[in-house]
Image 1: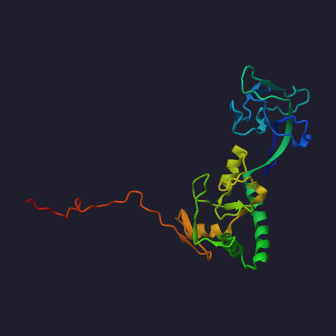
Image 2 (image 1 turned 90 degrees about the vertical axis):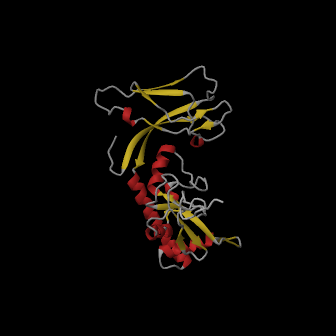
Image 3 (image 1 turned 135 degrees about the vertical axis):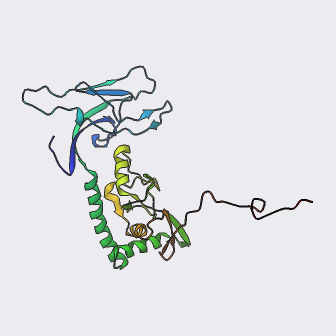
Length: 270
């Protein structure tokens, strides 16, 4: 496998379920559950969802990286071997015909994906500045936020937005959202990339729409300014004019002293 500093070249094992009604390019990834595999006699845990007896899935069927188990081709060396075996006697087994594919893929590293999102964000906000006649990306984003708060003839007096990523639960460093979403709330770019690599999901953490692939993500200058302005805040309030203010955190364990508990309160007995 060739080396690339910005990309990781891997070999992924895929399994497509044959659908005679559709073109092969539209066949879906689906493991014939329950199935296990060995590459060069090394057991490989496949990324397969669990099947319940009612037909529902727990998890996602996805390709499996088998690169760590492969031998580099050497003249006169033994070829790589793959064995896929299906477990018998399980009532939830998948039915049908399947096609297995070993596919060489180029996986971009996290830093490269983040740089690409930053680059496409600059292009997006350059266009947004022209549309809104704004002088800065921050102003263009603020105009967009105000439009979100005044849609369909309805005006929202204020809304709250968290400065913590809903996935990592820490303050965001690079706040992003999908350009196809219609909400202000953002999530952290690095945290979302790492989450997506493990879950193979690209859904927006807020509206749950499948619109958060890297090519659809944009940074938010507005939320970036909030992070810089309110260094210790976890949440802000956004007003209809686009201004923002910090939401003060309430004391979770307030101390209340009643009249009976006051040390200065004395009662005389009759």
